[in-house]
Length: 331
Image (cartoon, rainbow, N blue to C red; front, side):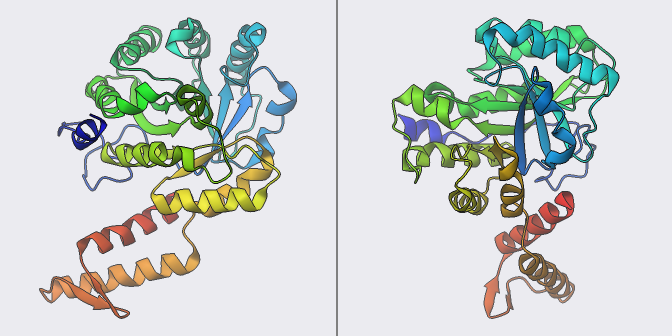
């Protein structure tokens, strides 16, 4: 049954008013590509941690209303985030300012959105945890449209896959998000999938291990479907923040698999993670020279060609272009 569902994980072609990082289309893109090599959570109610944001250096800062905030501090978190946005009292520098609201099924999502989007200054992206299906996405779209209207600057939508059911339905979830974003006046545009590993492991009853074998299938499904839908794929948290070598190994593994970034929970993880998801200098040089040679071969009317002892075809050329795109966007 799962194999049949996975076989159907091919998005229907749609006409959209944007292109993204992975696309070669030349249409306009309302939500500029934003590198998210590291995604760091900062509890919205914790001013001590909020004050450290200027020094974190993470690509994406997520002001959190969800898991990082106790139930009796939810109101304080959303109000503090609104104050941060209104008064611009935190210098984000080159980091993206984004916000994670609570899940739709928690009953807290609508109030989070009302407060967080209740002013002129807005986050560049919203994180929606525990996405279960189209109905939840439709709910969020309706609320956001009511709050910010249509036709204004779009915000990115980052969707979390955290349960067995959402993994099985992941293709339909992504397609639903794109369907809702088709309108040029849509206030949201899907930009990324995040794999919520610990909630997922709890949902399936798995025991967490250091080699992550219990998450192998899920991680590969998430990255595959994300790329099929032209979304960034953000890998799981590495919980043992003191184990920097283990973090490096898992980050480099994720980058090899096609993930574009990783969640982090401690400032000491940021540099290691971002380095893993940034192409090495030697890799950039290889890609630059390969594409230069490719263009020369094209002018001569040649197809496949030899480069540094290897036969090169179009998939390899696309890999080289991806390397340069990532390096350029992350610099």
